[in-house]
Length: 215
Image (cartoon, rainbow, N blue to C red; front, side, top):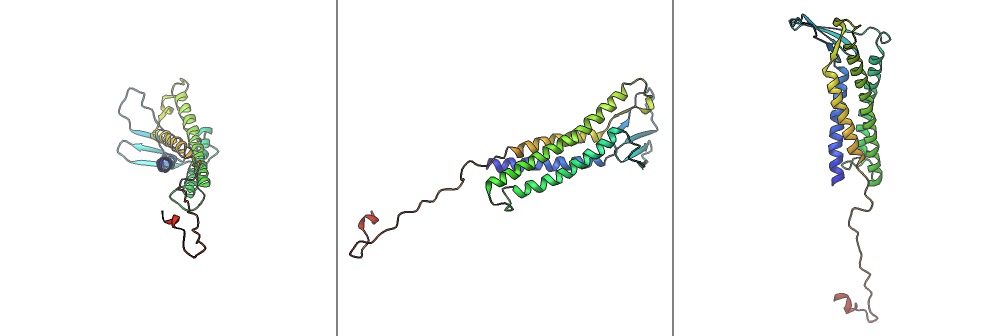
């Protein structure tokens, strides 16, 4: 019963984490304009994402432009693209593996094998969380380094966007949910009750059953 509860909680966290990874991958708010000048009236805000760059006007109008070339991107953006996509694919793969070995399904009959399959799904989710955590930390380090670099103009400095915070939350859910799935250990013995059969009653030489059988 405890193992089934761990599977439900772990799988729920992993599914939510995988969904947040996909959301973070699609959002353009990985880098946002840093307002560090004295003038608080800003005409536009720039968002830099993995797939596009958006300019939001003070009137609310937004214009986005998709990155033309992958090779022209910085190394952190290229790595973030690849690792977030791999993490999303692994999230879908981990969901299929966990469902195949879950206790509420009959895809696999043997309880020991089902527990091992769930453990394998947990490992997949943990790897998925690590894959999305690497580009997030790399991107945050790059943003912070450029922010405190005096050689970088103020107009080109960026701050950490909302997509990175969503990605960190997704990574934490994937790591925690995968760990819970790995804690679903197979039972050491048979969980059901053992059935004991009474010995066969034998008839006496005169054709009647022994009266001791009725005591």
